Image (cartoon, rainbow, N blue to C red):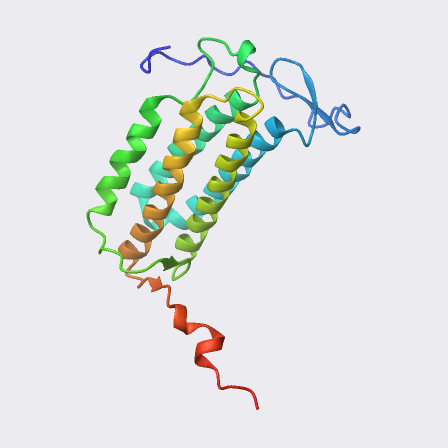
Length: 207
């Protein structure tokens, strides 16, 4: 499907929160197939869902930075689109089903380049913190990396859309840049990794 074609609107009706069908440890894919809840496919879209939740938390802290809040809101929709495909077996994917395309990764790259231009060059690794938003974005970054690892594991046993793998890889990079940009915009200094700040190098030897 060309990137500019419209995805189908959701065709769901959530009238009941619980169905009791998952009490025995299984759940349904979009095509109706039943799988154990610890299946790699369930773990993949479940981790993407977890990432989406943390993005939502970061948005609360991003209210002071409307430009970033708008981006994070878009990313939440994109992650739900990714989850839609991961929750569907390849043979059941509809041509107009919501998904990740090349356009999503390309947009992330533009945003990475744009925000990175205003940041000082790094001479060491950065430690999470300084501001709540920075720390939350680092949590998002690490959950994104885990989502990517699970998807790679899934790809070893079942086809996974390569656009999703690329998107998650690029999103983790973006989250790193956004975390730095957030501190920069908020006027908060970064904490750089100092190997010799460890207890073994700063504390007096025990006698």
